[in-house]
Image (cartoon, rainbow, N blue to C red):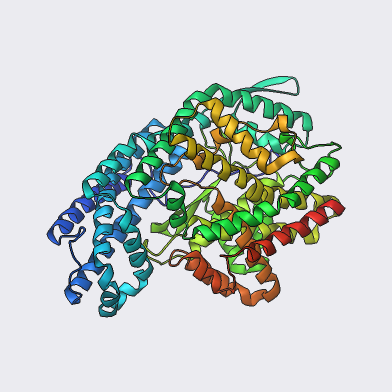
Length: 602
């Protein structure tokens, strides 16, 4: 990126709160605490907790249910605003001890909200036999029909109020604390790196970005330095992994779950048959991805690909983007799909919703977080000017557009299961790649195809390895803790089963478990297969867009708006898609196979 070009922005958090010491932030925190006290008294007064038997459905009960949901929604918006503000500060500066302290205070306060949620869920479970009648009595409840029916269904897995309350408090010092520990030690890791005869101490996020460098020697040295860096903190992070997974196992067992995977399936609003169909189709497709990896090795002049070359750019173009060029490129390509999307993205860039600058203390990777109270999003990225990072920006902006499509909905209506949460992001990635392919010179075309296939390989092959890894970790953790050596062994075994001989076995990455934050949430496990689901589901929708043209756009936006209000299969059926069998997934994978053919011929 040229020095005279605008640099990647740091996000503007002032629409949330001015700063940690400002009156608006302090007032927000106080209002949350006061609101929780009011809700606790209201719940006690109206006996909002699991009942021995379903009460009679009448107007007073319907009014009570509506009043409860209104209170829950208002507090959810406020808690979400506070949490987004503090998480944003910590994600970009893990040295910010004041923000860390405030986040810890919020988590303590939020345990009270969790305890109230347990009471609410138990109460709604008790109302299950009369929920339909209550909706008929009070039509306003209809907008929350899915929330009510799904909450009633899931309430069967609640422990008693006292145990759930104890779990919420203890998990701050167990599962959640271990997750924060992993984030802090990985984001603060710095390692020495030699380039152009000069040794610099660089954040590990910068080293990770060197996997996209055009110079193969730099990629290899970065890989070797990265492994040494991870080795220096592996014992600490292994303890975090054991703490998180042990917490998840204990909670699943005490709540009467068959497994942690069953919890993940319910969270993702799919069933085991759908997951089996998805993963089975992907396993069938491994030869397709290995064709791509072998072809890439040949294009790099190698017999077999090394791990550090997985993201090696191809072709002599090696196009790089300034921040401004990335903005203009994405806005232009998105506008071709619908002007609304282009205008939205321009707003996100221009109003500094994006923190794009890599730096010490900032977490690696990328994410997008919806700030429901102000109908905005905040996006974290680590932009280095590569086309891959432009694609990552497009991905996260797709999430933001998904959030925008849900503007005006209540907190209880918003969101999406993780499976459907990747729909807009992958769709937007594909928009960027296909639009760029149309205008690209032959050398640029190879670069774009490579970016598409590298992303697809991560979403299908690498995600499969992560699913295998996590499944085996849970199997072993049920009886004992795992050492760092064992975690590396399980990781490499999973990579061998998925990547096979398309990657030189001695270069497999043993520490992929260590830096991926997706493994370190005790509440959200198996945060891997939703990416594969989302990638292939979005490809299938993109094929529909190509077939239908502009008439597809309104239905697509409607789908995004409703992802928090139904299960995945019924939503898919509205587009004539059956996700419960392998055929849809095979058709989406066939799109990738055609891309591989174009790549081989390029």
